Image 1 (tube, rainbow, N blue to C red):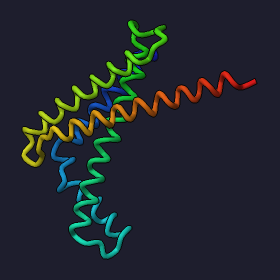
Image 2: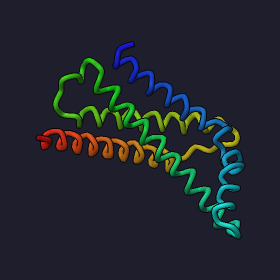
Image 3: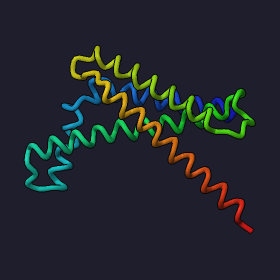
Length: 154
């Protein structure tokens, strides 16, 4: 299997993971079954209000991280696709990856509007898009650091 196909397969598998998390399986009621006991173990005597707030934060961090990964996977796959191969500027690729991730986030939120235990939220689309952007920036910084390390090695 060639690199391009492997890269796109990783993207589609990760999109399936995200899609699954945006069903009833990823609802607050289900995630509370393992997040809340863990938080109670980590912070004995935590107040119900604080527990609810931390659960909310962890769920939003999930949005951020899953879309950071998607952004990186999209950039990698798109950069290996014929049109972009050999181009020096990664910014076009990054913008395209960000647009695809944001579009997928919007579609996934629309999908959630049909799941009784979930709600669709423009705020979550923004968090997802910021996650993709963060992933792309970190990925780019790591690539630049690796390039500078290689070029300064004697």
